[in-house]
Image 1 (tube, helix red, strand yellow):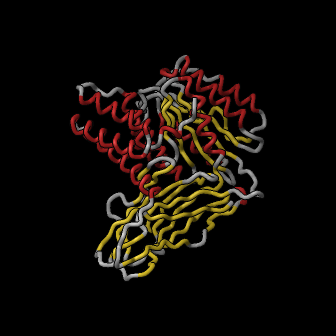
Image 2 (cartoon, rainbow, N blue to C red):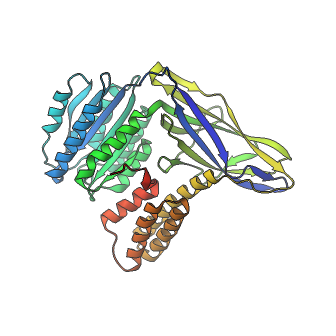
Image 3 (cartoon, rainbow, N blue to C red):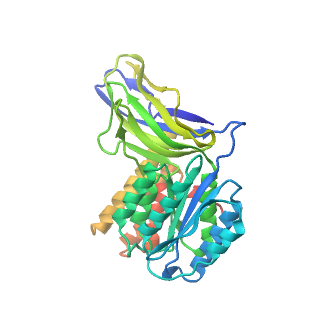
Length: 418
């Protein structure tokens, strides 16, 4: 298994007479499978809400979706199941798959009742997942349909950060329309996972399968992008780095002891891009091709039990010319638009929380236009519909707000076909 690392500037030419210039650097990273690569065992934890509000068809469809996942696991894969209401219990302790039917029987035994304590479910889920993380791809699926009324949202975020330190990936699934979109998104972002919305019970199996396919595609784990900037190059001061594919996430930057900047990537999927967008500023440079940065990826290869591997440095060059003509890249432009769509939608939500409905509608319209520029017709429709409702004096329903949040982070066409 190797790492594919490709940097691209939005404009690879630079004016030699410009004292300061701004560029967007897109870095595409993925795992590349080789013929001899063995399959990496999976280590999954299902953290399932079985509170009273899940009674009936919601819980039955979730149990069936979870059972279907058990059938797709292979010998050597590991699974644990945690169930929570206002308390949490380990339904299936972390174990290799030897008796799938017994595990499915345990899942089917779940009944609905009680309140909701997401943090307790997350705590036990992380504990179980950590037991099987050696030489595996370790991910959790956390599903809930409600607010964390018996728990502590700040504790959820601390637990998500703890999972990150253990090299565990957290995916969240909001069922119905009454779940807390802020906390589920923050858990998924901290865990570099995916946020999903199961609006109707019959969609549960599709969303579980979509996430499972992503987990199956993971080849390398615990990856970090390492950035060494030359003396004339610096990061923007405000929100300098974000992931823009497969989901949009604002990412923190860590300065390492040797001065390099590190950005956590988490799991790398085989032949599926994880794209990081960095906002950088360049000082005046002499004419000729100039190196402005060096990039490396540090990662683990669980199939070979190899930790802390490093790719060869990849330099980033820019052509400095006295006869400047822009040399733009259409791919990077798409990534810039994806980040703009996300940030415009975030601004709209902030304005809505402040009671500025007109301002929120304007920002949603702007985000809709950005989505259209990307060719993301599905997102444009959702965003414009929400803007129109606000302009006509309507309130946005919980469903409207959740759809808006989901389409701001990703492209609707990426969801499974029905």
